Length: 392
Ligand SMILES: Cc1cc2nc3c(=O)[nH]c(=O)nc-3n(C[C@H](O)[C@H](O)[C@H](O)COP(=O)(O)OP(=O)(O)OC[C@H]3O[C@@H](n4cnc5c(N)ncnc54)[C@H](O)[C@@H]3O)c2cc1C
Image 1 (cartoon, rainbow, N blue to C red):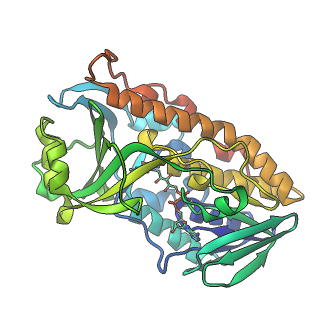
Image 2: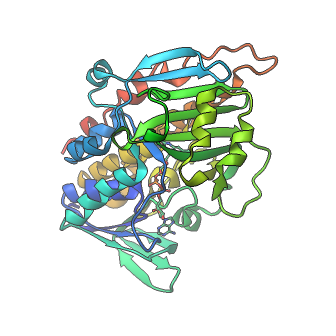
Image 3: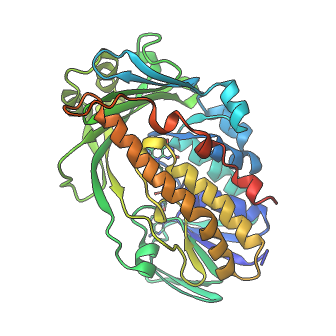
C-alpha cells in the first residue's frame, strides 16, 4: 500500500501530524483545510512524553524544544489560600522514567513547527479554503465533496476535522455532541507584567468548588497561559468558541487567591477565549469503507488530563503504521481501531473523572481530598510508546 494517495481532512495538530507520519512512510498525502490560512488559537497546550516520542520519531524534537517551556512539576493548590496540596515531578527523572520530556507550548508555536515540516516534505500538499461537507466511502474509493461545490476522488481518507467533524456526521449520522456544563476561559499574560516568581515554572493548578484554574509558562517562559474552568448552567452562544472579557471573568474568582486574580486581571489585551467543553459517548467504530476518523473527530474529551492533542498524535503514528503494514485500507483501519479505541475510551473516562475530582474540593457534603487524581499514577498514560508498537 505504500505510495497510495491518502486524503486528510483538517490541518490541526492531528491532521498535520498524520500527514507527516504518512509521508515519512512514503505515502502521498493531500491535506484539505477549511481555513484560508494555517494557524492555531492563542492558547497553551502540553505534550506529554507519549506524544513527544512521536515528535522525536518525526525528527521534530529539537525544533519543539526551541519554542517550549519545560514545567518542573505539577503542583495543585487550594483555591483560597494558594497552599499546595499535591506535587508530582515533571523533571529530568520523569523524562528518564517515561522516555521523553513533558513540554508546554503556545499552540501557534507547535502548529508552526508542524506546518514548516509539512511544507518541507515533497510528499505533502495542503489545500486551503477546502471545507469538506460530505464523504462517500466504499472499498477502494472515497469521494470528498466540498462546501464550494467541488469534489475529489481518492483511494483512502482520514478525517481529522475536529469535534464538529462534518466527515463523521456524513458517515455515521448526527451523534449528538453534548455541552458538558463546563466552560474553559483561556488567556495569555506577558510574564514581564507579573512580579517575579508569582507563577512558578510548573504546571500550576488551583482547585476549588465547581472551578479550577491551570497556569503555566509557554514560549520559552515569555508568556503565561491560563485556563479557567468553570461549571456553567448553559451555553447560549451559537459558536462553541467566542471572545470573552477578562474583567467579567475576574468577578467569577472573588474569594480566590491573589495569584489567580492577578493573572486574570493582566490578560493580554483584556481578552480571553471562552470555550464550551463538549463530550460524546465513545464510538464503537471509527471507520466506514476506506475512511477513518482521528483525534477529536473520533474521541473528543474534556482537557483535564491534557491528552486530547496527544491522543491525536498517537492516532497519527498508529494509522500510518497500520496503512504501511496492510494490503488494503479496510484491514489497516480495522487494526488501527483495535489498537486505539480501548485506550482513547479509557483516557476519555479518566479525564472526566479528573475534572470531577478537581471540582469536588471544598464542596458541601463531599469530603474528598484532592490527591492528584490521574496525575498521581501516570504510568499507563505517559509510559505508552506508540512508536515502539508500530516501528518503521
Ligand atoms: C481548554 C483546553 C485545553 C486543552 N489542553 C490540551 C493539552 O494541554 N494537551 C492536549 O494534548 N490536548 C489539550 N486539549 C485538547 C486539544 O486541543 C484537542 O484534542 C486537539 O486540538 C484535537 O486536535 P484535532 O487535530 O483532532 O482537531 P482540531 O484541533 O479541532 O483541528 C481540526 C482542524 O480541521 C479543520 N476543519 C474542521 N472542519 C473541517 C472541514 N469540514 N473541512 C476541512 N477542514 C476542517 C479545522 O479548521 C482545524 O484546522 C485542550 C482542549 C481544550 C478545550
